Amino acid sequence: MRILHTADWHIGQTLNGWSREAEHRAFLVQLGEILLREQVDALLVAGDVFDGLNPSGEAQRLLYAALAGYVRANPRLQIVLTSGNHDPAQRLEAPEAVLRELGVHVLGTLSRGPEGVDLGRHLIALRDATGQVRAQVLALPFLRQADLPGLRLGAEAGTEAGSGGAVTAALRALLAETVARAQALAGAVPLIAMAHLTCAGGLESAGAERRILIGGDHAVPPDVFPPALAYVALGHLHRPQSLDGGRVRYSGSPFPLSASEIGYDHGVTLLDLDAGAAPRHIPLPRPVPVLRLPARGTAPLPEILAALAALPPGAPARAEGPFLYLALAADRPVTEITAALEAALEPLPLRLAGLTITRPETAAPTAPPPQDLSRTTPEALFAAAFRDLHGCDPETRHLGAFRDALSEV
Ligand SMILES: [Mn+2]
Image (tube, rainbow, N blue to C red):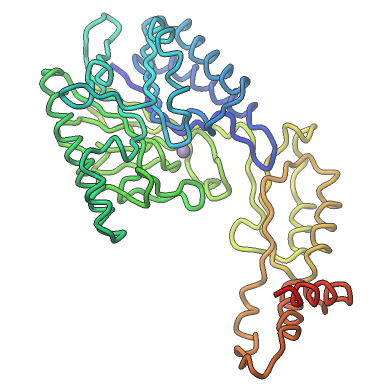
């Protein structure tokens, strides 16, 4: 019995206006090959299927075509998709009735019954090739504040730490009660969970995924997942990583979704229930290179231009070319930098994904100490700030604009 765990597809994502559809298409093809090659019985997608709350027709077409292809290639394949914080929860599960006929379960929102979480919907039996139930999966979507009974009282208690503790306590209670009922229904077969949240001890993917859980900056410890869960398939953090000895795991996203993720070993996770082995990470090739210049920190314009000139020749067309993040240290006026970059990038088949221009940090120690405000003028402060930002004195038109603004204060 083999289960493939993946998450954070972010179908429909764009970088600086550039579509990533070709990369998603390539990933979905690779995934189909892995499903067949590894003889996977069940595919779990733990949230952030789509990148935004309003996925385009193309994005939806891509998803459903891939799902149909997987089921066509292996009619016994079971697929479970849950929502992440990026997904349109209601829309994701709108085609639920049709997908169910194909063995595809989609859970965007948490359903409750008189007993609590509706296990008729959220507990899904996974069968092996012979049709025997070999595992049960408790499929939980991204949880919102209203999904955690008792949270509101604790959250209103005040402090950040207090509300974080309240989230953990409320989630712990929900999982304890739900898993206990699920375990009773599951009987002897392994119980697996899917969730989309930040788990403490997880390595953050800086800048890309805020610590989001139920509208706050909260991370929960891995032990909120009761020991009765043999495996917890998580989504939300884009770097593949194991917690609690591999029992709780982030599969990571299939490819970098921001500059901070370039160094991640992106892939999917294969879980072999019969072998009883640790989950196995299957790395994925990058459909398109994602570059950052420089690799770390910032560099001045001449260094960046030299690095651009040294890049190996890439794709024939820019629309398929590598993504490029640039981080420059401002050693001259910003307008001069952007003009030089535009000229340097024009003939290259690169897609600019992001550009930051910052003052070099070495400027800080040499900067004059803060002045006594009574001994300076607003205009002198403006001129100093302008020089600091652009590396030259403000022109008459800049001073004129400043005086206009000052007169309106
Ligand atoms: Mn995500």
